[in-house]
Length: 137
Image 1 (cartoon, helix red, strand yellow):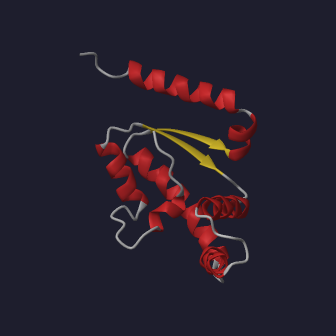
Image 2: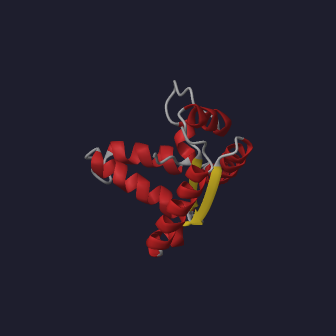
Image 3: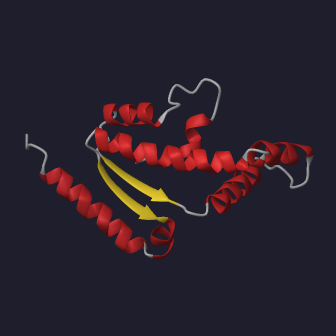
């Protein structure tokens, strides 16, 4: 199991997995067959949350030169296009997973935050259903 966000595709200069298509191919090669997708409508809140968590982990003091530099990188002048690109990458990831015959379960952020038990139950049912379709050895 792994946690991937659309913006992870553009992290780093030497990223060999820079497209949703490539990511899904690598996932398939690793034996992944089920994709749990969570779309957070309020992407800006997600970006702010991730920004705060990362800077706290890196011990970057709010208002410092490093903090301001990171803020400009994260929330710069092209924020709207970044948000649109994240949504496009999310949708493309779903389509690519479906093309490769992954079982895809989509949830919204509210479900995950407030109805976690029912989300986990749905995931377990999908995994069991997928396993029952596998040929026995």
